[in-house]
Image 1 (cartoon, rainbow, N blue to C red):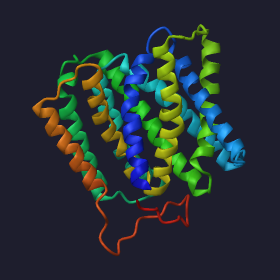
Image 2 (image 1 turned 90 degrees about the vertical axis):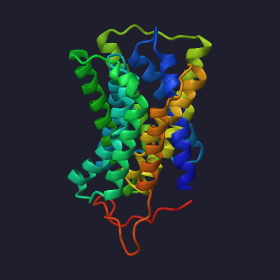
Image 3 (image 1 turned 45 degrees about the horizontal axis):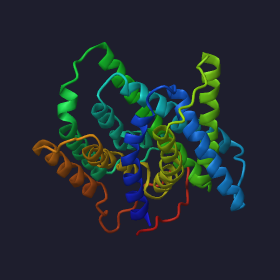
Image 4 (image 1 turned 45 degrees about the vertical axis):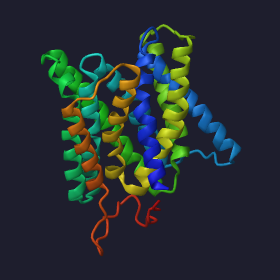
Length: 309
């Protein structure tokens, strides 16, 4: 089951980049993100009501859900879309793909969890591969104040994403399912974005064109309802470090989509980079030696062993 979820995340999120690009235009960024997560939250709430699983988070879990909504379904996307306006999308992808390493470092700082050597090694291989994949686009960008600002936006988005991962792991440790916390978190993100738009006087605009609406539906249903639920389920089963390695793989899928839709051409360095990314994937998921036991998270003192596909 884990393998199915992992492949699903890579394929879905690897194809959302082109949809995000199609949404840039007349509709302000804050409203496009709000439309996406507002629709996704409505679908998740309808599902929970139909399954009779709707529950309101209480106590400490409520605060964590609010923080997850702010990090994963609001600030994360605001940061990355602003970064994309200032620096090459390839550089944004490389910074975002470092989330596997940031997840490991944050888990170490917050929970005292030991960092598995193969996670660090695999992450380093993956990032090296991505640098080769996107090197022409990265080197074509002149360094300057706007570049530094773009990198700051991208790093901020990555840290928000990684923080949201740890919050989801903690919530799952309390027995809450991602489909429940995502519904409330997406509603929180939508409310914050709409509140910002109203306070900033952002004009209420919607693009009824088939391209924009199609991109919105794809981002909301497969990209958010399915993608985030599958990904955060992996966070609970595999840990934030291994689950986040999917962020290294989906830019590879995005490049193949770009080759079909935008005329991207594979080069020898890009193929070498692809091999490094795949090697890193193998290393990250290498089985631990017999007798080794993973460090338990303080938020989940008695976790169930993850299911294996």
